[in-house]
Image 1 (cartoon, rainbow, N blue to C red):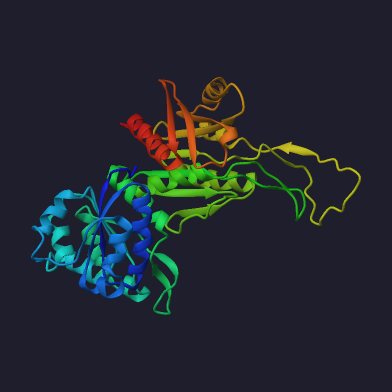
Image 2: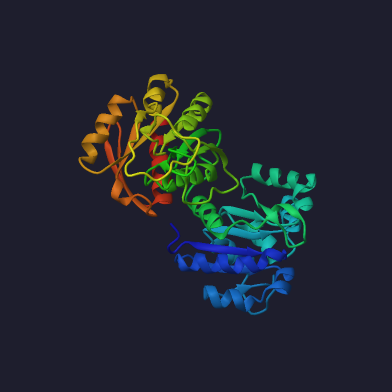
Length: 389
């Protein structure tokens, strides 16, 4: 999604400027073409030579550099995306006020490319109503913002204002290179991960689902403007703080959470690997070693089937099926039996990988989607959007 994309990285004078070095590095490794514009204060914190060495592109720092062309125009025209990371309160305020008095602010003013801000600052600065008013104003004009993370800040405070993880910023940038807020106003419910059914306080039954596909869908939908609710079981990756997340480790917990949230959402993706069976009598104390152990199991509730029965005409229900054989045939049976709008089927041998191959089946057609789970998530969202339209 980033190969040969032209990204103009704006670096401002926040202490998180040093983290932009890793961002520039990873963008370049993913074959994006990265040019950097640094403010005068940013140059005080990180050498322009560092960015030039990593990106192999010129770094611009001056509005009226005598040896350069009219850079605030040439860079504005060149960029496919302008990514400001970190974005200080000062720069956000200037852009919101229409002030263009240095190379970065004039370039932002001149570009027609998407502009994405990644604020990072002191917790009280971020919470300041003047800054929040400026952010909301810019959002109304079509600028994009990524929320900072919570945690220990360089200033010694703890709270919201940390520079997000570089991987999350890249997902953010990838989305806005290819999409606008086309899911704004949509409410989307996504389940992800592997249920765990307790045998005793130490042992449980589970499966190989990593939760990566559900998490990719949640990220993609969120960055495209949707109001996303993620219901997660056991996951192999950390859930980013910007996502609304409800923990539901067991099948029973997931049933309760899904039934609570289902009526509030227009689009539902059931990617979680819900346990089909649970112990009849889970023990409250650890079972001691024996020569043999007989474990009585009972069926759990079929959440997807119940959703299919309750689904309104205005709702879209997407199921997932991990199969070991006759993938298409078994998926079609599930599509009909559970009254789904789509079913996305894959070979369970690929569970846990970062890439996927999904056979997406509806009553109208079949489409194969291949690539990284994040890329496939976007394309699956596109299919749902087409059905809605």
